[in-house]
Structures are given as C-alpha cells and as structure tokens.
Amino acid sequence: MSAERPLAGRRILNTRAFEQSGSLDAGLRALGAEPAGVPSIFFEPPDDLGPLHEAARSIDEAAWVVFTSGTGVEQGWGAIREAWPDGLPAGIGVAAIGSGTASALAEVGAPVDFLPPEASGDALVATLPVRPGDRVVLLRSHIGREAIATGLAARGADVRDVTAYCTRVGADPHGVDMGLMLRPDAITFTSPSTVRGFLKGVGDLRRLDGIPLVPIGPVTAEALTDAGLPVARIPEDYTIPGLLDALVTLFSTSADAETPSTP
Image (cartoon, rainbow, N blue to C red; front, side, top):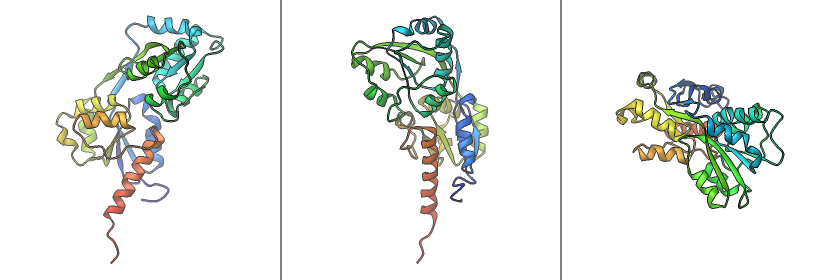
C-alpha cells in the first residue's frame, strides 16, 4: 500500500445500479483497488407517467423543485425540459441532495440553487429556505424516504411528492455468488435499497461473516443493522468521495493494527 494508492490490492464489491456504478468504480481504481460490480437495484420509469408530466407542466407554481438522486434528475429534468423547452420559469429554486445529484444537474444544464450542508434528506429538511405556503415539488423514487416530504410539510410547505422513477430491488443470486467467490475485502452500499437488494441475493447472512460492510451514511447503515449485520465504518461525508475516504481510513487503521510494535 502506498500513499498514492492506499487501496492497492484490495477488492471492493460495488452494489450500485449498473448505470450508477461508474463514479465509485473510477474512484476505487484511482486508489489502487479492484472494483467488482454486483448491481442490487435497477430503475424503471413509473407505471403511470401522468403525475410526473403534470408536475412538470405546473412547475411555474412552485418555489422549489428538489432532486434526491442522479436518476431523479435524468427522469424529472427530462420531463421539465419537455414541458418548458425555453428553460425553467423564473423564480423557481432547484435543490439537490448531495454532490452527485448536483453534478447530474450541472451535466444537463440545470441550475443548482441550494445544496444542504450534509448529503442527507434530514439536512435538506432542516435547512431549505422554504416559507409557509411555498410549493415544493419533490422528485424521487417510489420507494424514497417519505421523511423529506413529511418534514417539509411540517415546516408549512405545500409539498407535491412525485414519483420520477421506480427502483426495483434485488441482486441476481448468481452475481452475488460470483462476487463473494472473489473474497472481497469490503462491500459498499449507497442506499438502503442496495442493502435490501444485495441481501436478497445472499440468502444466508453468515456468508458475509468477516467482510467489512461500508455504507455511505447513517440511513444506509441503519438498513444493515436492522438486518443484524455490523457496520465497519460510516463516512463523515455522505457522498461517493466520503465513502472512498472511509475505505482508505478503514484499511489504514487495519494495517496499523496488524503492524507489530517495535520492542
């Protein structure tokens, strides 16, 4: 292990959806690790696109539109752009949870007017500058956390909670078998859905004994502990860079612990 490649020789399982896995894989490779993908979720358009298109057409009535993921940007901003080809109406703020979502907005030419200090729904609820009566359009997965909508409503916002995409949960058991046969040094999880999807494919949880499980943040960590599994480390910053930093710290600490002291 070197300072430039602190994860050299480590094999890390990435449980993100295939189309989301690139940034984490690239970060792992840059640090010397060998990523292996075991997609544990995948995405589909909503069964009924009507509510999404209606929300997009009436977006001019909103004070804020909130995106919670890059997939939400792909589906939600696409609907808004279709309804408003000349650009977002003036006076509407765009909020994103996390730097990854903000980057996805930037890639499609959308503004980012608000980013909470932490990449979490709770931080957005606490800090979004919303006034009583302001309409907030929340574009998220059909299984996303309801706490964002209820929290903003408790602050007096008129929340329109809209399904922008559907998350299907479940890893291919054969893919899980192949991933575990690689004897990974750690398994990463970036959402509660990736936890649930991966564990569906695992079956007997004793197969994970001795493998560090590293979630992207406390909500994902809770999904692991609810399943009776230990959490190796929670990042300080709930983002992909934060997850990478947590892996580096985890293995540097492990290496220090394995190094015998000099008499």
